[in-house]
Every structure is written in structure tokens, then in C-alpha cells.
Amino acid sequence: MALEDIEIISADSMQVYRGMDVGTAKPSLADRSLVRHHLIDVAEPSEDWDVTRFVAAANSAISQVEARGHRPLLVGGTGLYVHALIDGFEIPGRWPEVAARLEESSTNELYRRLSELDPGAARKIDPGNRRRLVRALEVVIGSGRQFSSYGPGVGAFPPTEWSLAGVWLPRAVVDERAARRLEKMLQEGLVDEVRALAQRGLSRTARQALGYKEILEHVEAGVALDEVVDKIRRRTLRFARRQRMWWRRDPRVRWFGAVLDPIEILPALLVYWCNEQSCRTG
Image (cartoon, rainbow, N blue to C red):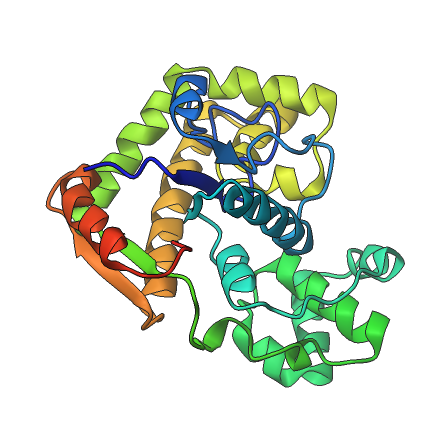
């Protein structure tokens, strides 16, 4: 069974960047020639990419896909991006001057200020997530409106026209696959890729990418490679667990379990999609 009318919409926040190939495990050019992909290689690494840009670009791509009589398959990656798209989040504006001033404060101070100005937002943000703290305070200060007032946010799961499917693997298998993935990236030249990108200039957003952030410590600050690789390994496992917890909260997701390889669930997944009446699939 095959779905020949599918085009893939990437929801990965880092595959948008040209040149960030090895560390984001981008689909190969050969794969992209077999199935049309969107939102890959659409921005320079020196640019900031955020949920606002993603939603606008994704909606444009979806319109093009459907105009061809095809179906968009949203794949990956960044949970906030997916929810913002499928649930139609109201996205606040930008106040760069406010954000620049906030960057001068410590992470602890940012969390304290947000707790005072918008307790509802503070409860939903990890106290150590500096980027999200800055963004929430940027909106509160810039707009005069609480960040938490922009819709129910990621904790709400309203009805959606999208069909949502998730792949479940045993934790030990996920850990082993993550370790092999990291080793493959290092063999394929991740360090050289990061070194070249650092010379070109990386935006604040790009510099936070998993793997790139740590390798930059090696390239720019001389931290031992073994040390930063160990950081990547630990951060990857934490990230995988957070992703799993994020998506398990959403009752709209239908889960498909595999023992060793996600490819095992493909037949059941295809049947599920073909039985769904919605023209949109996520």
C-alpha cells in the first residue's frame, strides 16, 4: 500500500536552516526527490526562526499542497510548532528592543519577573528555559497584555481537523537509537559542519540547536570534544523523554507501538490514514 498524494511538511525548528544538515538529520536529497518536502532549507542560519514564521510558512505550503489535490503530512518535531499550527494559536507580536533589554538579566531574575507579572505563564514555563522566559516577558512588557492571555496554549486539546498519530518505542530502544544517531553524526562530520557555520555566523535560535550548542563550546571555547559529546548524549536523552511526555498528554494522538524499528508500524499507519476522512494528516 502507498499514499502517492502525500507531501511532507517538516515541523522541525532547525531543519529550516541551510547548512545545518548533519546535526539535524535532514532527509537526503534522494529522499526529497521521491516525496516532496516543505520547510527544509528555507532560512539562513544567521536568521532567527520562530513559531510565527513557521505557522505562516506552513499554512502557505499546505495551501499549495491542497491546490495540487494532494494531502499534507506534518512530520516531527517541535511540539509548540505543531500545536500552534493545528490549533490556530493567536501569536503575539515582536518587540526586539524589549527582548534585547531582557537578555541582560539572569535566568533566575527573568523567572522572578514573569512570576510577578504573569503567574499563569510562569507556571507553564520551565524556570531554566531562558528563551521562553524572554519571549513571555517580551510580550507582557511590549504589549501590556499577559502572555497567558493569548489563548489556552499547549495545555488545551480542542477538536482538530487533523488526524494525529504517534510512534511508540521502548525506552531502551530509543536510548540505543539516540546513541547510534549521535555516533553517525560525528562520523559524518558534525564538528566540521559546526565550525563552518560558526564562521558564517549563527543566530541565537540556531545556536541553541541540540548538538550544535555543545559543539560550539568545543569550537569556540576549546572545551574537550569528549566532554561536549557527553553533554550532547545526556541532553538528547532528556529531550527524548520530554518529547514523549509532551505528546502523551494529547488525547487526540493515536499511538502505534513498535518493538525495535518504527518501520514496523507502517502498514497499520497506512490503513489508519486511508480510513480517515480528513484530507489533512499529522
